[in-house]
Image 1 (tube, rainbow, N blue to C red):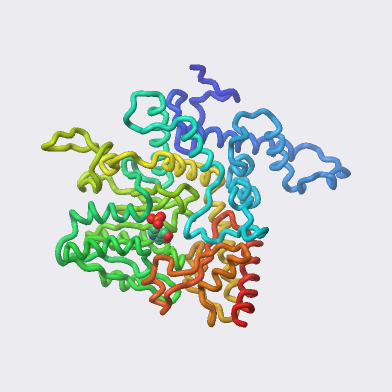
Image 2: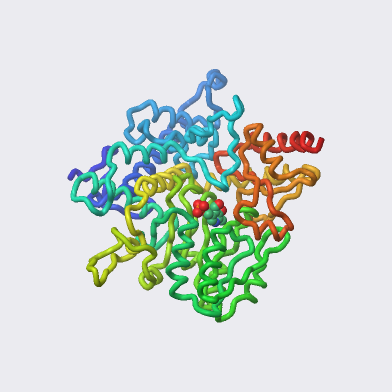
Length: 511
Ligand SMILES: Cc1ncc(COP(=O)(O)O)c(C=O)c1O
C-alpha cells in the first residue's frame, strides 16, 4: 500500500482526534476524523493566505462577504468550487461549511437547511416552528439518508450470514456502537447495549440488575423530577420484592435537595435512579456528586440521560455512574433505538433480559450458554437500520460542533426565559440557572390545553399536558403545563414569534 496521502503527507504521520493512526488500520471513524481535520486545516491555510492577499480598497464595497470574513468564507467558496473529494455533495451542508466549531461561529441558518422538516408549512401556509424538542428532535438529511442507504444498498441481518451484505450490515451496526461509545466516553463498546429507548433501557436494568440485587426491605432512591419511565419500572420491582421507593425532593426553582438526598442514603439503599436533566424543569442535576455519595453508601446509580444527550455529551467514566441510558430520537436520530451503557463488572454478573436468537452461544433442550455482553442482552434481530441512523446522528452533531451548538442553544434559552418572565400572569416552572432547553409555564386563567392549541394554530408546536411526569407537576400543585423546548436549530426569531403569539393568545383566550 502506498503510504503517502494525496496531499503529500505520509499517512503514518497523521494524527486524528482519537490519537495516532497507522495507514493499515484506519477505522471508518479515524478516516472520517482525518478527512474533517484536513478539510479544516486546508480551510485555515487557504483563509490565512487569502487574508494576506493585497486588497484594492475600491473593490472592498463590491465584495459579497464582510471584510472580516474574507479568509474564512472565500476559502470555503474556493474549496467548494474545486474538485476536492472531502467536500462531496452527499455531505450535510452544515458539515461542508461549518466543520470546525473552533474555527467558525455557529451558523444556525446553515444548520436548518440540513433538517427538511423545518421547511414544512402547517395549517395552510404557516411555517412550522418546532419547539417540541423535549418530546422528540427532528432528523437531519444525513440521518435520513444513512437509513435509506442501508435499506437500498446493504439490507441484511447482522452477525449471521456468511455473505457480503451481512458483513457490510454488521460492520455498520457495530461501528454505530463504537460511535455511541465514543460519544459517551465509555471504556469499551461492549458496555453499550442496544434497546428500543430510555423506557426499555430502565426496564432492562430493573428486570436484570434489579431482580438480582433488590430484596425485601431494600430501598430504591428516585428524584422527585423523574419521568414516569424512571418511576414505574422501579415501582413494579419494589412491589414484587417488598422493597420501598424513597424520593429526593427539589426546591422552588427545581433543584434537587442534596441535603435531603444525603439523609436518604442508608445501607438499605441498593439503587439510586436519577434524571440527568428533568424533562419538565430542564434542571441539570449534579449527578457526579450524587454518584460519589451513592458509591460511598455502596449503592449503584442509574442515570436517565433522555433529556441531557440532546444538549451535551455525557462522560460516563468521569461521572462514574453504573448505568446511563438514552433514546436515539431525542438525539436527532431515529425512534425505536436507544442505549444502555453499563459498567462491564455489572454486565458480566447480571442475567439476560430476554431469551432467543443472537444472545446464545450453545443451546440444547437441557441447557443454554450465552454470548458475552453486549450480545447476551440483545435477543432477536435488533433495530439495525436505526442503530446505523443513531450512529449517523452522532456523526452529524460532532461534525457541526456540539459544544458550539450547546452554547448557542443556551443563549437562546436564556433569551426565551427572560422574555417569558416579562409576560404578566405567566408563571415559569423550573428556573434553575443550570437548566437546558425547556421553558415550562402556566398562565393564570388560561388552560394549558387551550394555549397549546392556540400556539399550534399559528404553526408553533409545543407540548401541553403532564409530560409523563405527573409527580413533578404535582409538586407545584399542577396537573399540566405548556412546555416549549429549544434545540440548536431554533432561532431567536422563532423565540420572538413564540413570545408574541403567547401574548396574542392571552388576549384572545381571556376574552
Ligand atoms: C427524562 C425522560 N426519561 C425518559 C423518557 C422516555 O423516553 P422514551 O419514550 O424514548 O423511552 C423521556 C421521554 O420524554 C424523558 O424525557
